[in-house]
Image: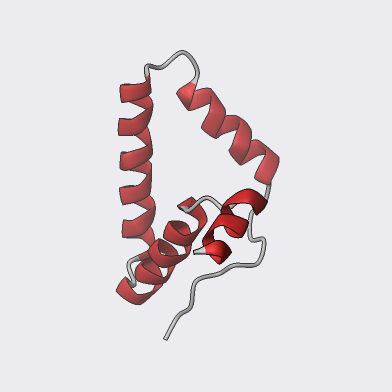
Length: 79
């Protein structure tokens, strides 16, 4: 069973980042969101393996949660 590759695997990460930012340059937020959605679907199709995709979704979902600040952590401990 394939696993999600979490180690750096870019042949040229700076070139990819430059291309990614360029495709978004001077686009509306709505247009950028459509580009991102298409890119996600294209790459998901390339990966193809449902378990790998679900692992990626789980990790991405965790990263989307903001880490609690110290004051929020202290407030949670008081309750």
